[in-house]
Image (cartoon, rainbow, N blue to C red; front, side, top):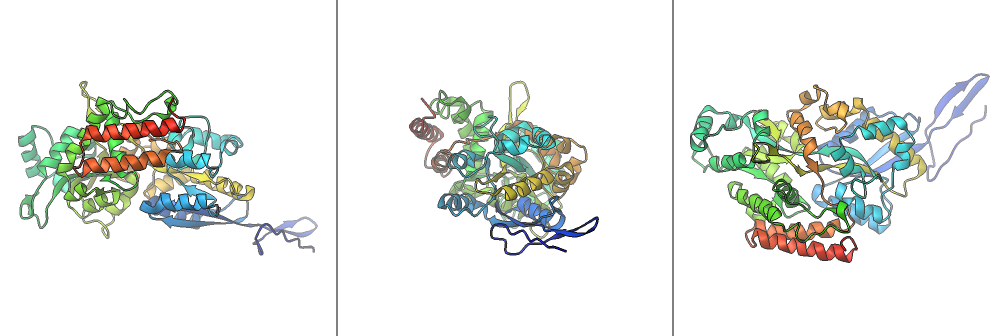
Length: 477
């Protein structure tokens, strides 16, 4: 019997699979393949790692390890950027925010994946079955082009978290009706049909001081009606403001119109300014921390879980903690619906909002063997079986056959709102200059949020900066 050992790269030792052949025993050895991944540290990526460790069996027979760096969200971009630009080539696989695509594709770090998708007709069908808003946001660069760089890992949208014990209380229902002559939204469908006007009324109505009553109980702390993200860090206020701009008929700078599309006259159009003013108008009904510029997605989520807010507009990806009695005082009191929208003259609500979530991307130095195993994992991950398991564990799927299945809504109380929200999703810029655009915009929005600057000045400053930056980059003529 002859045993032949295959040694590859730095592998000093490998696992093996024995295959018995007619006429004798020949041993074929498998390889150890490690995929090192950078991911944000939150439930969707923790679930992914758990499923990989417990359920994934590589069809290749190789021993595949997923070595994951869980990085806190506030540090995620800076840590990944530092790794990529340092040349250390640490990561094969990254769960990347969609707006990073341009910067890291142009920098030579993210691998184009068209050849990997085209090589497998069944996998190509899977990719094509992804909701177009998610597909364009997570996979394409330039935005909405035929060039693919990402596989969807976790699609995310903004939804409304509600306290049904407060919202459905008979006394509160009657008082709200008497004051505003409208129904206080209580069910998921009623919340999904809620416009910003009703959301504002809820904010005003539920402003209660310590010692006052709420749903028949005396409060031991101040209580607030509404919350949503308005923080200076990362993209927290930008996500909210973009939503208001779009719904009011304004726009952000549209990269698909480069080089003829402008920022000035668009970002600071009367409609965009009206959106910003509407965003700012609601802040007075939120917990006072919002005026410090630190109301990020985690702060608003924590305030809601602590029972201090009636309604919170936040990402689905944070929802698991609200269901857990160990981390949520309101775990048994929850109701979910779509995020509010702007009601038009025709009575219909515009729910257009900034998409969240992330794609998987491969780095350009990933070896052919690592690439093969990474793609095999992604195919497994995007299979209907695993997408349903992921959704049942608190994740989400943008694959049509999965999210349109009636059982999808049974997995989590927000899943119906998630599926109904997909058609309304839009994304911010994918261009290499996104970080400069985002940082300056966040700084300007913070001045408005903290009361140091009005909406028009803010949007004029943002528009001028973006016009100058993008002209210098050749993206505006």
